[in-house]
Length: 206
Image (cartoon, rainbow, N blue to C red; front, side, top):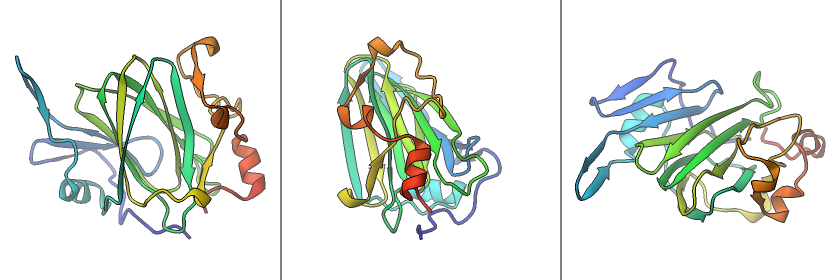
């Protein structure tokens, strides 16, 4: 069984101290986070994660256990990735340079939105991040060269519990926004099973 990360779901947008705005999206357990960006001729400054603000707005006690960063060229498609570790794995994702189309897929078989997806565009200077609860699939496509993405995760990488779903699964039908010839996908992701194949294998979050 997955550990329950979120004590309660926020029914509407909440703004903390007139700074961080947290809005639930169409899939239960996904939030868009918007933080102010202070810019001048030197560059910009941004507070992109505050655990107490997140807990106050969403009920999620997000404890960081690992931090990852990826650098991608335009057209790089990463995902759909997920974990079935006993404690699950929540993610906090932001783009620090370049831009991505970030996609979250509901892969919980008992969920009313099973197989549905939502997307958010994240840019390095936008002040936006995404909070993804446990039991959801995640992927993104880089819209520009030199796109850097940072992930905070609630549990460390566990090789025996990490799986992929084909990002081009026709039944999920994600609109990545690029021609197939423009996509750069790892062999592992390109050859991954579909969502229904993973369900038949019994390798989806419970």
